[in-house]
Image 1: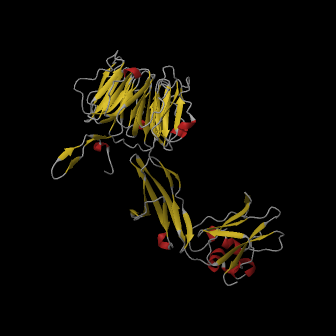
Image 2 (image 1 turned 135 degrees about the vertical axis):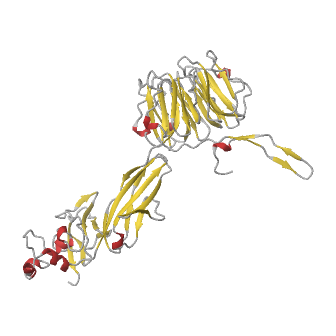
Image 3 (image 1 turned 60 degrees about the vertical axis):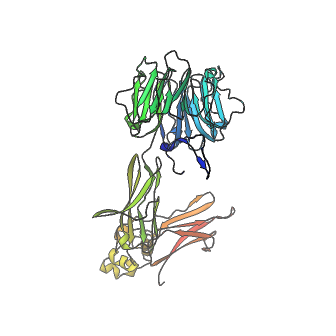
Length: 531
């Protein structure tokens, strides 16, 4: 089986036979856990201990969340655990071992759990009832849950292990379990046949499973109430209803997950919207509009609510407009972020509209050996299921020009007749900058003939020294001019030896790494073709 979805979960048997007999194996259960794309954590409601004050590091790359009485946990894509909020018992002091390799998290009243990729469990925080005393040798765990002062773990053989408060109430012989949940003093287990088992405190009827309840696909436990989601997307809740937390809103359908707090309940629908009911005294049941239609996962603390929300794509940098000469390659690049998967499509803009560039779906668009016809606007559309954004850039392919054409555009007829004014080495402004240098470095861009105004080199050229390397960058537009950067230690002898240059079709960068004892100077020499 490949490309599994949650609809593939269930019991499977194998039929074995030969020419004389046939037998059917015992059923085996397949559990398919949905993969949550990384997103940003949002929290609201009670913030007495900072449990709803999401740190910046949890605003991207989070794949799982958990909420306790006054603290919050988040699991990053790199397998590390984040924790914030109430730390009176060390429940937000994440142990070093939870810095990597974690695949699941759970939060109790004052303790925290982490499931490692090797099937072992870490626990920290309040241990008054032994809730952080992980049984010795415990392994093969595939899911964890934490309640008030209890911890529950699901093994890969479908059995359940519990420790801390309420562990003695665990039903004997509990098998074929696919999911677990823990409330304050009670716990729930979902069996492979869609039925639910409950144990522990029943003072509010929270452990009395409704008769005939079947077709359950997800479970959750609040303080003194229980919640289940059925295959048809409806929700059933029972137990304490003092604040309406077990009074499921009428007509609520298309639910795929639920969570229970102290006196409130929340549900996530298939369209990624969130519905909440019950206590709202701290705003825990008032859903921010910013997460509606974007919620990937949810959790409920005593009086706060936490979700992972998908992030629309954003462009971090680029694409940047470019200028280049004929027959050079041009690269447009864009850096993006947002919830995966992210798609990109580069487009060519024109007066008539825009059109997709075939195959241009990467972060970099490469245009080979550009011609004048390639000049114009380009755009990249960046999209995911939560939105889209567009970046724009302009490409100008410079037409071929010559120093003679520049002279004709720059000087009058009388001035052209005077080499002391219009000649290559003449300096009519008296600023120490010959005409050829002005032309070569585009220092008078408006006067340049045959094309648009292009930004010129910074003038005067000022090399920079950083980390032992001397660097000089200048605009090298002209194809009829040779640009050479030379180095000298005494301002008498100049050589290009030891100087490295890189040219991108528009700018030239020259670097030189002098020895510790050298004092190095750089100069630019321009030579017009033909002498």
